[in-house]
Amino acid sequence: MNKTTYRFETAAIHGGQQPDKAYGAVMPPIYQTSTYAQTAPGKNLGYGYSRGANPTRTALENSLKSLEQGSHAFAYASGMAAVDAVLKLLQPGDQVICTQDIYGGSFRLFKGIFEQYGLVFKFIDLGNANDLSKHLNKDTKMVWLESPTNPMLQLVDIAAIAAQLKGTDILLAVDNTFASPYLQQPLNLGADIVMHSATKYLGGHSDVIAGALVVKDEALADRLRFITNSTGAICGPMDSFLVVRGIKTLALRMQRHCENTAKIAVFLKNHPKIENVFWPGFPEHPNHEIAKKQMRDFGGMLAFKLRDSDQNATIACIQRLNLFTLAESLGGVESLIGHPATMSHGSMPKNEQLKNGISPNLVRLSVGIEAVEDLIDDLKSALNEND
Ligand SMILES: *Cc1c(COP(=O)(O)O)cnc(C)c1O
Image 1 (cartoon, rainbow, N blue to C red):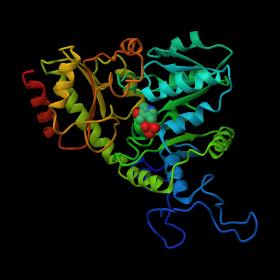
Image 2 (tube, rainbow, N blue to C red; image 1 turned 180 degrees about the horizontal axis):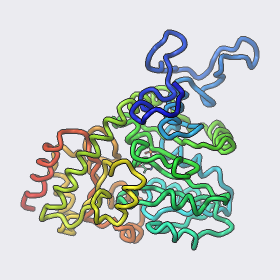
Image 3 (cartoon, rainbow, N blue to C red; image 1 turned 45 degrees about the vertical axis):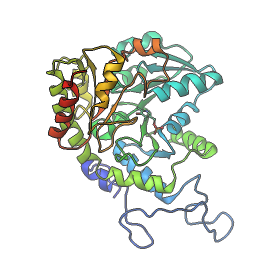
Image 4 (cartoon, rainbow, N blue to C red; image 1 turned 30 degrees about the vertical axis):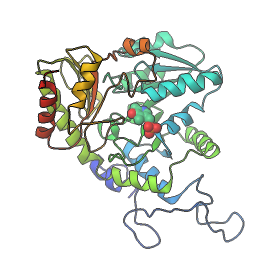
């Protein structure tokens, strides 16, 4: 099943998958082994040592390749391990241009670890793709994008950025965690590297931490394979299995995530206690046109600001919810709610937070696939309680 022309829903189930060679198991067995018997030194059945490759991980990597329409995929122990592998492509002195409101953990890795090794990070607003050229210089070696961004749901025109980098040696890397490949496929928009926290929509059940990279270019894949095998932050067989299993229902889940989120966005927008709802599906969202162009739907995430700007009142409102669980993370079947200023973006300095719109009354929702009427009822009662 290696045809690349399947529709997404089919590719999510069959892409790169085949019954296991030993007994025809329909799902890839969990090859919980570190090493493989050799018939003569260096002679084996395709696998030598599980840091380099493992059949369950291969099944996941083949699926990822098919979802993102790439040629090579790598599965990692976490999303951050995948980001880490990408940055190890660079040398001291190299400059990376990033979108401003990136995932807090990526910000921490860039500033807290890689700056020490001489990489230079420049955070800019890429709401207007044409602004990129002002920031490029001879040291620029990578552009790191998230779209939609976390938590403000801003979009970057990936194809427009890719067009500006064409013909240069600057790599375009896109963290596609928020959108999932169901909504957008950055390699097809001209990106060189697509990264996922597979912990989120790909796994989809909040039961695994994993990460992924997918690329098209052979030479780039060789470098990533060398980095990955040398540093060893690979996805284990059990975790690979869980992500493969999650991906089978990705299309169905995403469809429901998007439908529920659209209804909740409208409900919140009309609610007197809400000041602002950040969701790219609204025609007045500043990046709505980009969303229509590069995404299949508007996604399962939204953020909003309460009219009452007080942090304690915001947290009290969050705590009155029953169905939305207060938790880090996103992209699971269950609805989650987060307070970015103290949670996902707590490691970002206050002034950086405010610059990015992460105020104390900002709330982020990862809308699950429950009955949307129940989710709205839950929000309704939490908002209407007298503080
Ligand atoms: C969660 C997340 C990551 C990090 O992934 P882990 O699997 O938690 O290591 C990176 N980027 C985004 C956008 C995320 O949401």
